[in-house]
Length: 284
Image 1 (cartoon, helix red, strand yellow):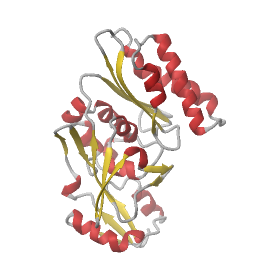
Image 2: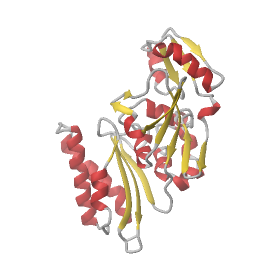
Image 3: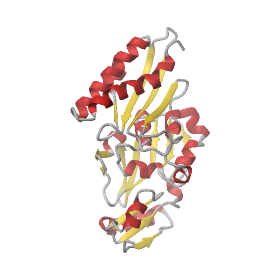
Image 4: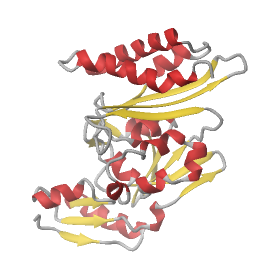
């Protein structure tokens, strides 16, 4: 086992005070699903383990005016069972459906999923979909960081050692079509090899009036797909049009990642996943 001192603050200010002086030597534990792997393997090279899992300031899901607020300490099980998310951020709720096993969902937090900055973080594409802003705190105050800026590269976060994500502020989406799906090595308990979140609205003529699309796992960091959104907006979705848009999405993915040995299967896979998510719109 790693040699460290366990710290459990009573409130957020106490946690931020501790990190201000000891952040470089501290690992933060919220759900612990990633940190505990390093603890058990003896790879945790920190002096302190700061447990923020019980901080009330990081809890709660609420609709505050035009903002949908999700605390960073909210678990994936709480996301999965939230009626508020079901009606305002359905893709985010769906991202929790096949997130690891039930025991993991009961302790894993959305803040931990984001801070870990894994390319396959299941909640991130849906947060991008909703133009989420992370409220990040240190002893000096609060910063508002767009989701696009949270991960700087695979497993590298823009957070400093003195900072804690407090909550996420999302733009709620209602009265449209939303989905999140992923591809893994198996149907259950699988790490995402590719994931996608989408929200679509159509007008009275059947044309797409609003579209948000985000891709995860198959790029170094999850990212929005503005070119595909622009291509489809204002058009009536047909099978042929969506297939063409899926091809554009695949090409955009390749532009980001470059041609690799995996491109030969990732290109048709991302196009197929796009069709699987958006084809139910056709004729609806």
